[in-house]
Length: 144
Figure 1 (cartoon, one colour):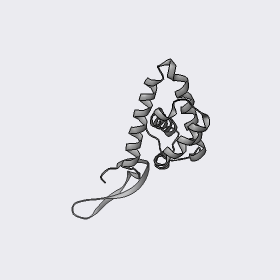
Figure 2 (spheres, one colour; figure 1 turned 135 degrees about the vertical axis):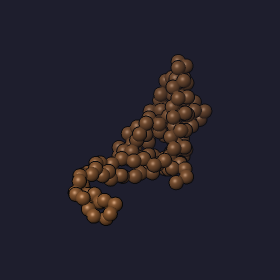
Figure 3 (cartoon, helix red, strand yellow; figure 1 turned 90 degrees about the horizontal axis):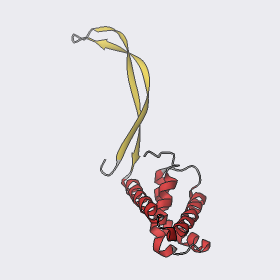
Figure 4 (tube, helix red, strand yellow; figure 1 turned 90 degrees about the vertical axis):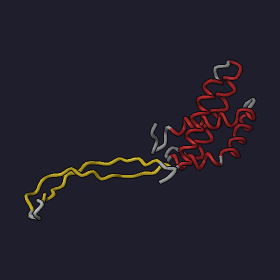
């Protein structure tokens, strides 16, 4: 499937399988390990969002090294993360988080304006992406 990564997981189970010979007569019953695969798809939009979140988190980590910006950026990150927690909750998937990320511009502006975090219009996308990156680690289907 184009644009998707397939993740496999499963559990082993034993079965008795009758081994057969070339002439068609059966030999004996032997135990064979079978693996039942459980397949889940991670869509391209989730992967793209995750890349954006990782890049924003990396850029934010560099930006907070400036002592003049550190407090403001941390306040902004906290405000977006609190609103994200309120909207998504504690149990979620990466797909649900990516869907919320698509709508985040509207509510993250409001959350930052209410908290009066200084300088937020210039750093909105940076803080937004970093908050989603940090929050994504709690997803039910998170894999680094």
